[in-house]
Image (cartoon, rainbow, N blue to C red; front, side):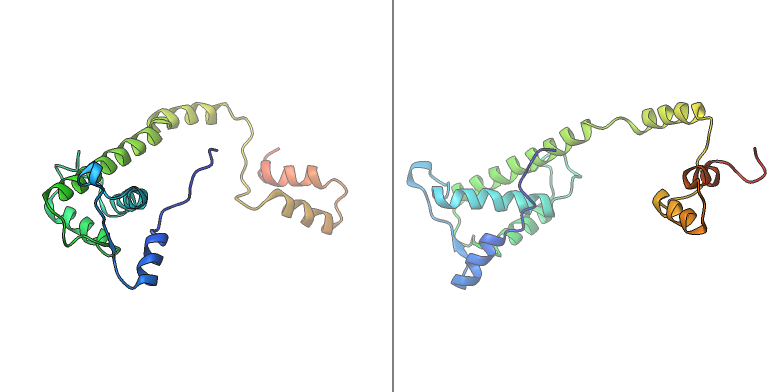
Length: 175
């Protein structure tokens, strides 16, 4: 399995807002117009991704098609750590574009993840064929074999493996 980062919970930005006792102001980078400064951009983009993944349902094809009340809820969640009160049109368009990119990327990531798995009907058909091939059936439930072996040893059985096999796979009255 590939090593990845754990889930985002906005802990760093929450800690900054608690220590400073104020929301983080978004500074402007003069070279990139509405974008925040380079130091803020990483945390800003990371937190936008977290808010989108947490508060945006997968019901809409794109960010543009999403209802305004959902977009407002998402912005309000982001404004708990960031000061978004003095945003001009350029900055709002930039933030909207970031939300759109993160939503699109999240949907794409989920789609790629679920493409790895087979269709449930295809799996059910394969399992049915495999079950029909079985000649001996297990009927002991979910209790581990090691517990059964230990119980047989305590009863004084010299052949605990054979006794457990008979108990688990052979039904009483059947030979």
